[in-house]
Length: 389
Image (cartoon, rainbow, N blue to C red; front, side, top):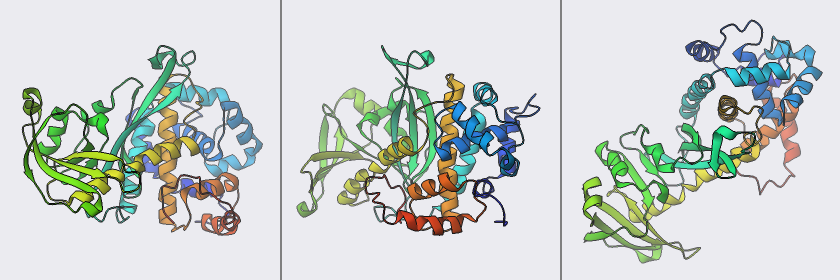
């Protein structure tokens, strides 16, 4: 990095300007925008994410307090909350969704060699969805229940590096399983999901496209055992069967054989049943794969804890989706910088350091070294870690 550049400017130097401008041009984002460009909007919103700003008034006050430094950050326009609000309301949220996809591709390249909890060479994805609660009186377009409003964040997480590869934002009452309808499947990859995704017609597409799934069984599903495999009871595996579905409707939706593994967790003593179309992996590996699905739960809890996606700066659907996608892009950008600079600290600590040094003119690596030692005595055992040290 060039000497004299602020930490914020150094961070944004990892963004491909050509990629960002292609996303803007694709949706005519800067059409009739004489002063406050999409890039200005992104910088203001990214600043809000990195420094935990709670409102547009808060963003305006903080940025105006450092007005002489804004030009060097890349913000050319005068910052006003009304201008940011108008941009969030009117500029297509797909600009930032497409931009985040570019960051996803860059992050996956950097984290491709990250180890998995299970020793496998395959690509492993975890699928899940989380509810982001809203106030019905403020967000009437997002009605979820009689007195509640919400949107749902569907995510496919690459377990190598905890990188969200596919994200879809829907109405809160959309069923989790509908995420599978438009999900592009990767041949040879393993997809881990909970019982909410058990729909045999949809699951059969994995077999048709040479992909693998691991999920939990549901009560009421009837199976007919075809063959059994020997198991090591010491591992917690109770049975390993090849089964077929019994009912006519289920057989029509999924005519191929399935593998059912029964497992007792040695720690909790909880009995679990897994379904998969992978007949090659050891039964205990199937159980451990499903256990690694917890990473997607950690991802949801982490972004809700450390990013601004619970309090929104605008009330329209476009403003909400814009803020969520910019928050995800900031998460990805910080993960990219962490890997490119070889920073040996957790993502949580890196975000904390960035939040207090954005306007310092020092290389990020030095800021991390100087300030990071102050975090050594802080017990962050309760913080959700997505990247091992």
